[in-house]
Length: 69
Image 1 (tube, rainbow, N blue to C red):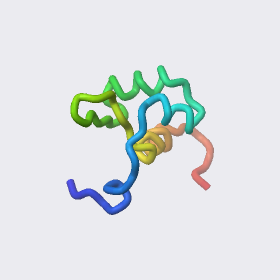
Image 2: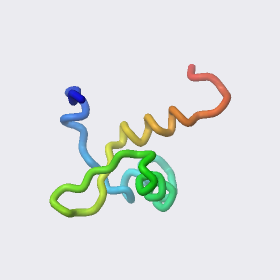
Image 3: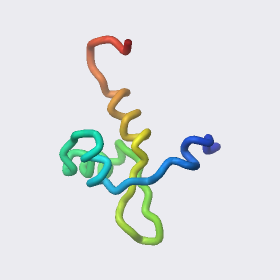
Image 4: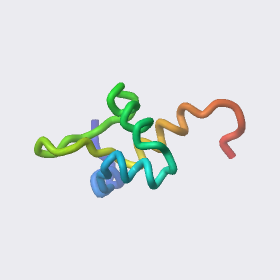
């Protein structure tokens, strides 16, 4: 799968920081990563990192009701 320009330059965040930015509990985000719902990355055996855009995409895809406008 080719990487677009945005993903190549987007920073990877710790789960804790991504959760704080989105106003979520870190344990909810961590559970979603562990289940494979949200992709994560481990660089050189470090802690799990996520891309904010991928987390937001999963949240948007799971939206129920309402409008997208």
